[in-house]
Image (tube, rainbow, N blue to C red; front, top):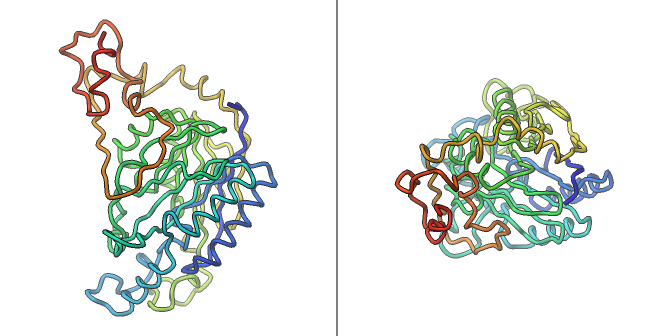
Length: 356
């Protein structure tokens, strides 16, 4: 595995609620990043077909059975991404063409069968061969997002092996879910994708904390959006009603090192591709002082149980050996068996081997 890696966070404005036009722009941006030698390209939350900021910046979105909101929801469904489908095929092709890893935030819909009326905020990871190697649905839609999105399952809470290192990701407020963070740390990330609508001060703190806690690099991506990009079906809130150029999502994309310090960015208020050349050997250096899955962990006192939810998603090949998911921090000697934690089902067969 190469120790020097070039990463890119795409901070751009999609063509809101137009999946076709936004996809075309995304493919061009991936190619632009590839020409600059990017090996990992990251997009923000729900970039296809655009984060639904109208939930926060438009009036009457929660009015019961409100016709304008119903029509807008139908338009969002129509422009959301089916997995697999034509959009994922195009993303797969561009990743394979440039031999890079691509992580894209999408609003996902189910084409048929159970859940066909539900949307998900999802993070899709395509490897350098074009294969969809991870499909993460946001575990808990944040606040007003619950009006339009359902809860995700847990099978995307993992890292996957790529030619640029182990890559995992979480979506916006999942970074304030302590057990999800620990599950991701235990999966052994080298590079963590933090996908946000935009990355304000508290979100910057969350990203830096994640890098410091997990001793990994964080590539954080946020969107640029102005009041004029809001859907015409709804009226904007008073604060922005007379200012179409008002920034409502201001980016904040950055690359952060395993010591929690910025390597590139954060960039605010303009479209950009935030890039950095990073040295993965720094993870080893920073692990001297802390490893929350190893020498800075107390598995004899604390236990993480991880249950994979199943909402009917097709299974994806998992480069991570599930049998090792939670064992990296477990002691192997000098701990009485009665002090060992109970093991989740995917580790039951390994309990004797670990305890011996």
